[in-house]
Length: 570
Image (cartoon, rainbow, N blue to C red; front, side, top):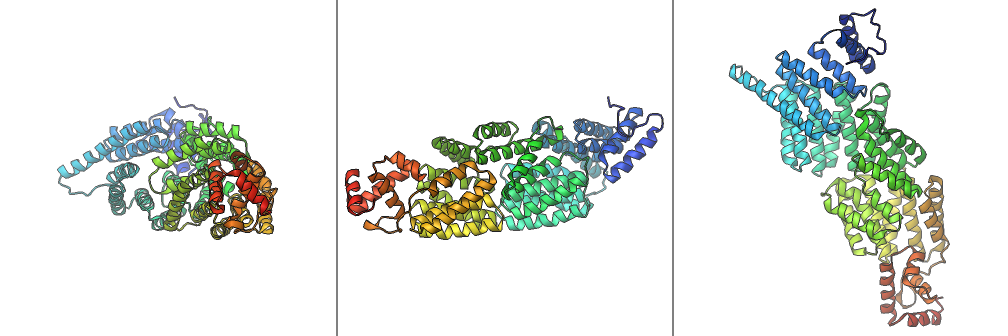
């Protein structure tokens, strides 16, 4: 039973007809709370016409009330009772899509199947009457979720053909909502087929329709969220930031609208984190990650918990990060790659390696792999698996070249530089790392730039440029301190206290890194102790020791120690 306790409701003043007119006017102004108050009050006085019942369902959904899906089901039945099967089919499509959005895919698919049956019945009836009528808009609407399912199943060619069919129907029927949804699907298919630049350019044209208010509020919200998600998937962060600002502005203009506000805020938190405003990003994520939020806001809770987990991990609050990753998973968000990096921060290198390897095995070529590969490079290098890190860095570089997005190109350059440095090729590492650092600064990404400058410092040190190393490490430490990145700060401060290295080529042809290992070996330290001091894996240290023995023609640690003292390397 709908309550009479509504905003602006006066039972002694307004008749059913007055409330309906007020609800229709509020709907036209997109004042959803007022529309819901008026139409729900009218519904208690008598039955609503099907289209008014649909307006009530729309107002309930957009103002975040849990009864929105129930009202849509009632509107569907009202259209059936009035023998308006075409409108009933559209209503069933929206109900199915909304249920899928709310995390009820089985019920959602059931309603979409019902919508297809009704649309076919409408077409069949027209054919029997001999009208020769082409497919109506309801036929196009049922194609949209069908094509989305094809895309989710990996059949992008069939999905694209189906979206094109829906687009043609939308153009013929002049249905702006259907046309926008079909074009969104086509752009998404092209992005996932590796044509990110073309796909996103097409979506830019679709987004113009939002600013011109050519489509309904529900479709506007769907388009904003879908396009921004795609931009994040392919690391086109400039587009993502621009459309996030537009989405934020749109949400602010509709203060009583709930469903898209959560996603808007999560995207804003991601942008703030990238630009180094971690406190503001955490405040937003904490507000969204509220399990008591309206049901319409539930899809944003998992991503908000993931965002919280990432910020806790970066700050070194590992127990809080662990709990937040688990909450993110419970709300349906994928916890990788963050969870693998948490295991690395906890010193569980093997667990981190297994987690990221499993995630990469499951990820199909494309945006998801691009998201995982930088973490894969970092973990494999820490585990001493340089060949595997090299393979991941090469794949990342190929994806970056194909996408031509600055963020992904910066990730790839950083990964290539890290691998070159681990291989003892400091000069080659410098070139890639300089490229990455310039890109991070252009993107205003201070944390990522600081991580790259840390590696630049190590490359300078390996080449014997201790002044350059100190400058880079000091700059990285300053940024980490400003951000509150405690683990990174502790690591860099430790590196800054290490003794200066000799030039890249030294006695016996040793690299700067090999000379560092030889000095520590001559001091009597084990491979594990050397690995801890130089922030390397034991496997990497063992490889350096083997290289030292080979280059110097030695057969034991004691012989290497004697060599170091004889040549005044200690």
